[in-house]
Length: 122
Image 1 (cartoon, rainbow, N blue to C red):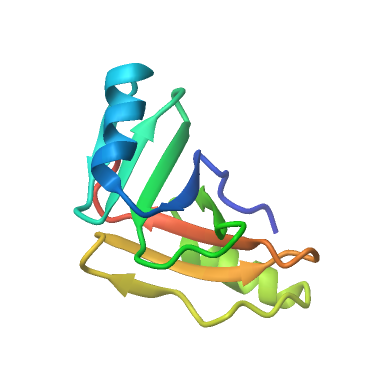
Image 2: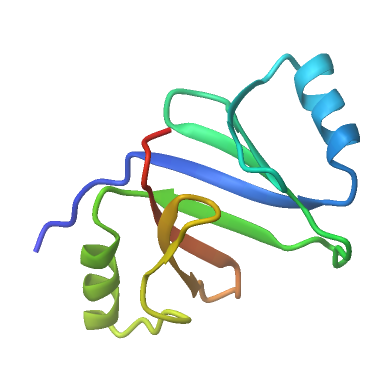
């Protein structure tokens, strides 16, 4: 079975101070905001590549990293991965706060991967 293609990619990083982060990435680097989700901000770096930052009171050392793969069919990816013996953390779910449908899994080195679809395209 051929899966629907990954169309975009986001790497999410946790930060303590969103104002400081925004000043650096917007004012210093000139990145444009693709989506402001309140406690998370996403910058478009290339056509299909994004960098996201989410405010978290406590950040681990080193802070957690989430690699997000964006596709139009989250359920298709979920089914295909489970058929290949991968056990996602939970089935896909809708998250109305962020306007997404998504699920998480871990790679062999315990990095967090998220497969998601934006309810409204980015």
